[in-house]
Image (cartoon, helix red, strand yellow):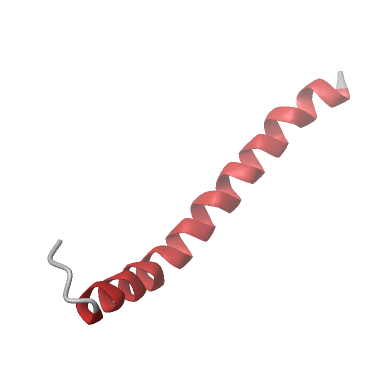
Length: 44
């Protein structure tokens, strides 16, 4: 019973961790990729 109730809670924490990580890294990754694309003169 405890393990069954712990699994959704761990999944919720994992989902929040992924969302927070993506929200934290998305602007930096976007700036990095835009800089790389600008340097390689690739038109997106």
